[in-house]
Length: 105
Picture 1 (tube, rainbow, N blue to C red):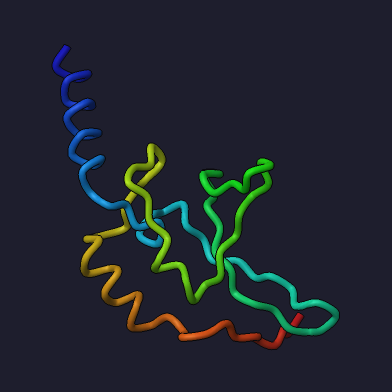
Picture 2 (cartoon, rainbow, N blue to C red):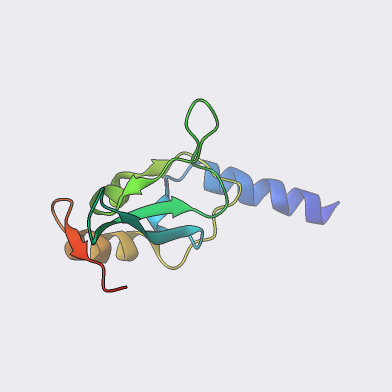
């Protein structure tokens, strides 16, 4: 009984906090080929499959906007560190616009 009560308490605690997807272990950086060239864009996807479009297709976000992606709760959320400190540092390091990078493959 104590185990189920503690699980409920943890879920209630997390439900009152904002969950930043960028601070989750399931948030992964991927390359997305630029149309007809030898360049790519950086994109972010959820390896837990939590980002879906209305028709069920996977949603992929632009890298420079990932700090804006948040949810009130996520059952797959696995934080990578203190959310406030992580997000502060991430916002400092993200590019301000979408950038194309040369593909060296």
